[in-house]
Image (tube, rainbow, N blue to C red; front, top):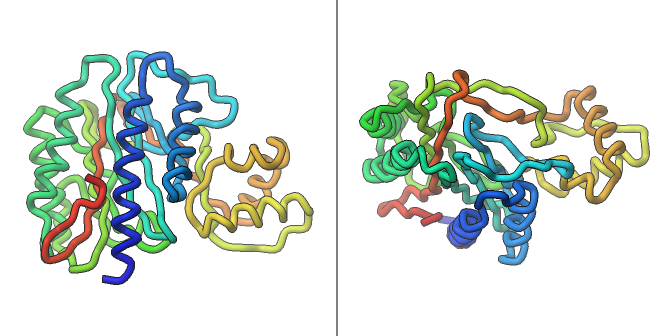
Length: 292
């Protein structure tokens, strides 16, 4: 398979970054400082973020990324760290949940075990719904629910969410896994209703096209965003190179032009806590866990 070397390198670095990030998640630590340290570590290891480091706590399942003025600190929380990196555009994606409250060990274990059991059934030809059914049955055996409207996904060059969509429940999709696919499997578990919705302001975005802009500094910000090659970015990355008002103005311009896609925080509908576990796998004659 072409580019397997880059995928393997990305996987190895992503696993190291996950464990490093996990060690930083402690009570009274700043979410912003932890995110900054993780992204610095990615750079030190010779890679780049495939998306901004996300640290989603309690009922937030995904897409929480601290901004420059974020004063949040860890407390008695359930904190999920989701990190993705790329090497020459080839991506690995992983997640881990840390229980700082001491109350949710079974919930954390349910998502971790669901991931382990799912990996056991994965091989060339495995139907997608079999993965979903395995995740669902494992999480339900702990007395919790999978989040049905969050999924795993394929990974492709400069594309964090490509074909196939990997369900977290039996959605009846019998599409088989094919040799050469790289997929992220990510069970989410909750004691709540098992659905998420968007809530709050986005700090994660990507560009979905290019249109001419008139203002000079907006063009400069557009050029900076183009360096991400279509991958997601966060406001904080831009506001450290341009002033905060200019960044806000530019993002608003891009939104009005219809070329900016926003990713608000994804919150469990009943405001119940959420745990997550995730690995990236290469589907081959022998399946490789790239982020182990």
